[in-house]
Image (cartoon, rainbow over all chains, first blue to last red; front, side, top):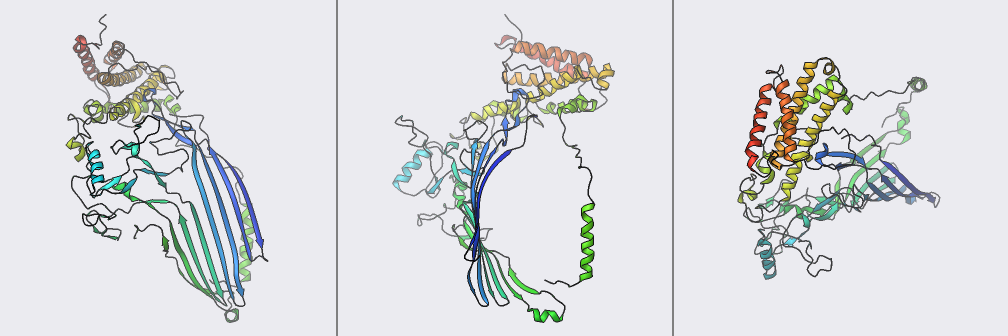
Length: 319
Length: 255
């Protein structure tokens, strides 16, 4: 349905920044703090069908963005023909939803949660693999009595507390059913911080430069082990499956049978990484040579733009 | 990187750059938005005609059709199963366990699914019928104002299609709200009391009687409702009412 009152989203932003430079400009940089409050966010409201319309777009909802951006440049060494300079940039951002269609109420169907970033992963929490122990077998029996098909070697899901036994208003035990009430926020694809360092070494006409980039704190979804073991399309080779002889195995027992595996829950990983984005070596031809052939400036450069990881927090990704 | 030392070239470039600022637009560019159609379009002859054609989307909705038929209130039983191994086994976890799907199915059936394309909900369709009737009554654009036969023909089609929606939903759900006035905008008021079946049948029988009396025996455009279609629906309505006579929710006033 049309909404003649529809308007733009509004943002109010506060910035505080400092630019600095000292030690005869050997060290310089800037620090900036910001807070953006966005209101009148466009959200779709569901209308009762009897009204003749099923949805309406309205200006409701508020979000907040807070962050810090730092850049830093320095020349630690400058001696004769040799110099080493560093450029660092760092930024961190916290995004959160403040208000939604019904005020402070989460919008479950859209996966919008008050206090969380706009995009979150919302799924079951995994808790390792069901073991062939007395304790686990008893717990599995309680689930299987409700129609589940758990078995030693399948993925164990956290049954979030939904039942209040002692009546104190706080849920203290699960209901032995894995269903929508057991979903939790598993993380966000937004990083906690990102940063980069560029190191440049110069010696006479030679110059070597590297750029390292890091993105830390985001959640990554994917990378499930192939069912039947062995190599997967992503090129990873996995052999650490649970089996009766390998109860410490990371992945569930390969099984096409009548058992239950919530494979999605096992695929949320810490996606933090640091990569070398660029390495380049360049040579600046001397003026004296160039003058003869009417050239102002000539540089030859050899660079590798193919990035490769120098650090990764999660051992599951191999591609 | 190579750079040529060429001063005469530089002069030309500088000359070119000098002229660029003087070549500019005097007026702001006026943007003509053609993609934005509003409901005002229905108040033109072409718009109203298009709206009435569009109403036929709802003719695709039938009892037999999936979510409007067995799946509406008999999901997850042996009467209706999804082609999925877990459902096909109908084990204790699945058998009739999640009645919430009935609520969402009914919601989709009467209007929650969408208000734009097939299979659309009944009330968005009914509202579109009411908008068409209102514009035929008030604005009477073009031929709808000048050609009386054309106008009554189109009105009969709309009444026929609105009655079809009420026939379907009252069959499945019993007493439902009887909405006969158009709603052009959402006003935040959602008070829709159910009307007794007797009132609904009085309304749709008189609507289809109008359709039967005003529709031609053959339409120039294939697919439009004819006198025979209206007669067929009218017979169905009479039979339905007579059949239900002995039951509690009889469409006929038995008091």
